[in-house]
Image (cartoon, rainbow, N blue to C red; front, side, top):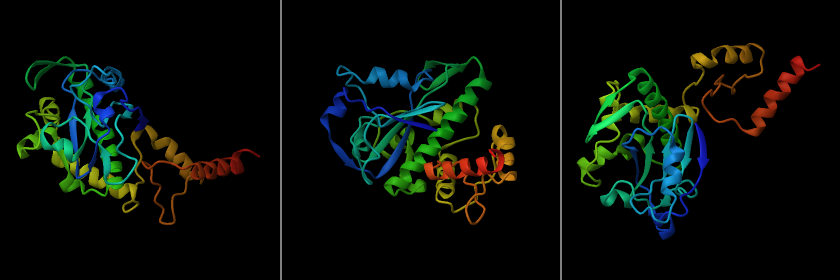
Amino acid sequence: MNLITKYLTNNPCYKKGLTIKVKGLMLHSVGVNQPNPLVFVNSWNKSSFSDACVHGFIGIDDVYITLPCMEKSGVAHRGWHGGGSSNDTHIGIEMCEPSQIKYVGGASFTISDKTSAVKFVEQVTKNAVDLFATLCIFHNLNPKTDIISHAEGNKRGIASAHADPDHLWRGLGMNYNMDKFRADVENKIKIMKGEIMDNTPHDWGKDAVNWAVNNKIMTGDDKGNLKLSSPITREEFVVMLKRFYDKFGK
């Protein structure tokens, strides 16, 4: 997840400067077949755009934070994302949607390339898990009780009548739902806190991880936890750089 801060400073919602006490997180999806989050950032960052304003957009590579929500624990800029009272309690984040779908009415869509569409949504959902885990830790939230979708917010009577993002997983035939999303966020939090081992690399990184471990470039903590999906500090980076130099640079 490549996290980028780019506030919607020209949006009327940002200019109001109102804040909320954060009680939860709401997951949305954009409702159009646009995979590039920067398209939304640029089009919403205008004084004439008074329809909505969210705290972030998630793409397949980049995640944009568009309203202040990670400066002070328990506090965030008030957004216009869920409608109803959810705007006064929840941080709202939008997932982008694949170009391979086409809406034909309401939450229904056709699919031109299911394999590519599913691959896109899987990665965007993974990025959402990473971001929501980070936000839960920062705001001291419980992923089991404090994360909802826009659709769930509507059922609770705190958000407008939308089906996202549940309709996206369902429409693509993916075996995924908000309960699994919350469980994934909970597991990610445990990994980030070092409560469970994070030593299984993705297929694309397996060879590199094995090489680094075998050559003692990467050794993990005192329990042997490599923390493969956790951010690396500058100190950790230079330690590994020195280990590489000591072994291969002389």
